[in-house]
Image (cartoon, rainbow, N blue to C red):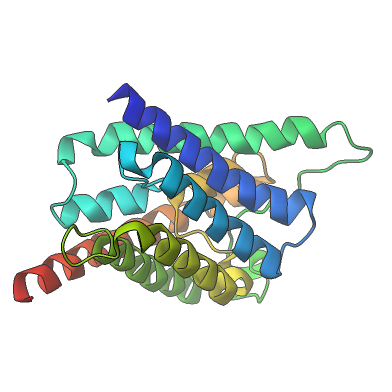
Length: 224
């Protein structure tokens, strides 16, 4: 179990590092760079440690796979804790790095938000639906391409990484793209106070979407 949790810690660390690194350090907060950075990092870590832990790196994925009966329910909490700690460690790492630069202010710190904290000023309903639906599709894709007989085999991480990149391109202007409560929590802890006040949405919507994705995978598996 410890090796699996360490793999989830490292995978989530790399995911959050790619978000903060591309959006805050490289200054590409609304561009292609963030989408590619996140997609490629998840793809790489899925190849590197996916065979150890399954390569979830996301509480919504863990819950979705459990709903799909692809993951033991008793391991949900340990996985989520490992993902949270990995994400927070990555966000904290960049805070230490950035504090060495002149006049650094964390500000929003690549956090997710709605209303005035959405790049396109989308309200909570629009942001909620976006996060729910995209997470549903993301978890469904993961569940389908990783199946032993019907899946994509060694190409599964490519499909997962590219899907995540596309979803970032769609939703960065809407919510700054979460789809992942660990990612949202990690940056919110170091951002201005509004990020924690709005964090509830980026737990509820992705977890609900993940569960729906798991149910869809189960449905397709039973009817195939």
